[in-house]
Amino acid sequence: MILCEGLTRSLDRNGIFDISFQVEKGQALALLGPADAGKSVLLRVLAGQVRQDAGKATILGMDCWSMRQKIFEKTVYLPASPCLEPKMTGEEYLRFTKDFFGDFNPQKARDLTEKMDIALTGQCGRMSPEARKKLSLLAALSQDKDVFLLDEPFSGLGPNARNALYDVLQDMRERGAAILMTSHVLDEARKACSHVSIIRKGRQVVTQAVEALSITRQKVYHITFSSPAEAADFAAEWEAGVELIGARAMVAIPSSPKTLLSTLARYDVVDFIGGREETEEGFLRYYGDDIV
Image (tube, rainbow, N blue to C red; front, side, top):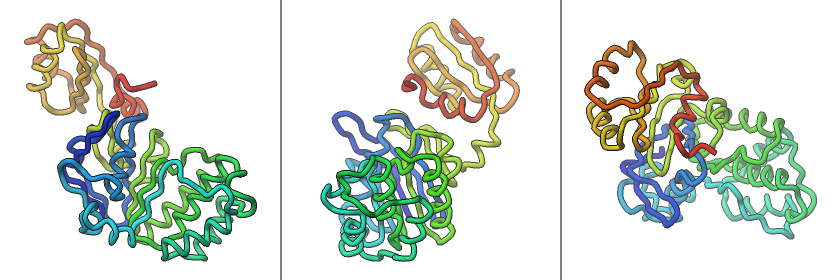
């Protein structure tokens, strides 16, 4: 239902480069990464707001740029900070959503209003940031669409609203919707999604099922070489499960380090640290020097 193949879009501050993944019916994929990793850029390409420089982006088999008006009829795109008319009340904003977007399900709206404790009275401009966020989610998730593009949907929500949103997203998946959301919090992805794709500096590091995050406990070794060139030569030889940052390489292996040690004997190694990682540490490892 959502497909990216070699998707590239370069912008002044950030961009995405050679991104490939797909989201099937009933699946939810989380794009995980720090600020400026390119996550929001990717959603904007899929939403038809910007055109890719290279590669392929389709929703329901339709090109996201040339067929964006047709895709708009079947897709919900929710930015991280939606623009709400300050003088509108919550009820007026929902009526606007119903008239403008179509496929608005009143029963869904009532259920979600109760689950997330959403206030519809008062002007949007006078609402708290969390109330505005919940109202935007209500308007988006009450639509009977096939595809949902959600940029940081959990950001700004309190614990009760977050738990309610987990349930709502699960219900949407069970009804056959395809969901693509962005996040910088691993726990959100594990609870809300079936798959994760880690994005670092606009590039895809790894894509896998959420279950793999819980069962994969690989040994990770941090290796410092005498120079970036030496590290690059090692990475070219080793190929699998290696991440380079200058003269430092991080290698993940599921078995004995015997082969790794024999390979490293041919290189000028300055430092070697090894250990067993937990899931959260493994995720942060992909961030590398972007951790703040």
